[in-house]
Image 1 (cartoon, rainbow, N blue to C red):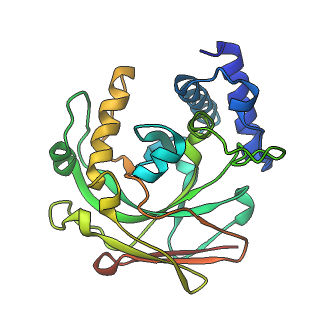
Image 2 (cartoon, rainbow, N blue to C red; image 1 turned 90 degrees about the vertical axis):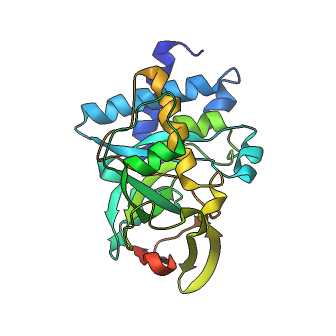
Length: 267
């Protein structure tokens, strides 16, 4: 484990990087002994800084849910991070591009919990029972830590991504909310349009076979730390498309078929 004072220092660096839109060199390059546990320790330290600054936690995100992403990251399970209140944006509007460093867009479903979920032992059936509804969502991911090192072009490691809020930077909810048992969520599909051109398509079954699986995993994963998912939490279940890069002026429209659509423009 990295020393506690170093963990606090790295969290401060991430907070500064987000404010100034200045990406950091990869922590794993500077500290090759870094572990996944260190990544989460840095993430928790950064969350404490956000809370001290007046931010609140509105939910959680689950990332690296596809088999391909886990293989590329050399891990065997997803990652996770809190969703802060200033990460939420309205569908149909403009989002300031200068809030981000190198944003990319992913297609997801969000579970809105009506009842708390406390592990261990949470199952997919508990998730479907606890969720008031499921709604289409777009996640905006970003890189406060360089995705590719500026000199070596080496890709960052999962330790870096975890410390960097699991890459989360923004959330847009929209479309038509549905009760989780009214639709076979595995077969929810979406088409992601960028500037009017279809860039990605996918099915929600790409998220661990069923998008509720990741929510159950998360509730059990955070239980040893005395944490649980709360009533009212928004839980992003994981992307079922590849990340799509974005530039200022790009517009995005994601069509979820019977579940409606979500759209925005980077202004």
